[in-house]
Length: 294
Image (cartoon, rainbow, N blue to C red; front, side, top):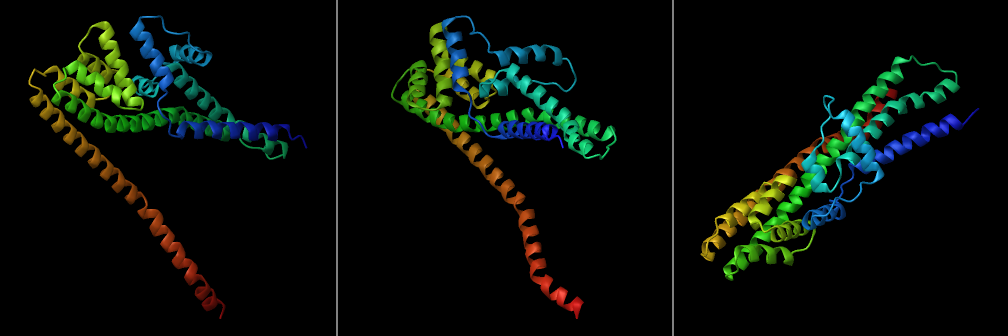
C-alpha cells in the first residue's frame, strides 16, 4: 500500500490545525511594527519596505476587496500592529486549506477501494473554506477587544497621573507628556508616540490624542482630549474633571468585568448540569442492570 497520500493528507490536516490554533490564541499588539510606523511618521521618512508576505497579501487584497463579504478591519489591525496584507494572506491560505483538505482526506478511502460521490468532498470543502475564511476576522475582533480593554485600564491610571500633574500646576502639554513617560506597557508607548509627534509637528497634544483615538478606535481617549482642550489656567477645575472621568471609566470597567463574569458563570451551568446527570446515570446503572437481569 502506498503511504505517501496518507502522509500528505495527515501533514496537510496537521498544518491546518496548527495555523487555526495560532489564529485563535490571544496575542499582544506588535509593538515593533507600531513603533516603526510611529517613528516614520514623526521623522517624516519614507515607510520601510514591506516584507514578502505583506506584498503578496496586498496583491491579493487588491483583487479580492471588491468581492461581497470581504472586509478588512483596518482599525483593529492597526491596534494589533498587523498589516492588511498579512491579514488577507492568512484568510486566503486558510480558505485554500479548507477547500483542499476534504479532497485530500478522501485519498486513503480511494486507495482502500471505497468510492465516494464527488459532491461530498466538494461540499465539505466549500463549507470548510467559508468557515476558515472567516476565522481570522473572529480572531482579530477578539484580540482587538482585549487590547482595547487593556488600553482602557491603562488610560484610567494615565488620567490619575495627568490629574496629579495638573494639580501641581503643570501645563496641559507638560502634564500629558510627563504622565505618559511615567507609565509602562504598550498603551503608554502609543501615548508617548502620539505626544512626541504633536511636539515635532507643532500641533496641540489633544489633537494628537484625538487622531490616535480615531486611528485605533479608542473612544475613551476622546474624553481626555476634550477635557484638555477646554483646560484653562485653573488647574483645580481640570483636576476635578479628570478625576470624575477616571471614576466613571473605572465604573464602566467594573461593570464590564461583572457582566463578563456572569456570562462565564452562565456558560458553565449547562456542562455542570450535564455532568450531574451523567453521575446520576452512572450510579443508577448497576441497579437498573440488576433489575433487568433478575
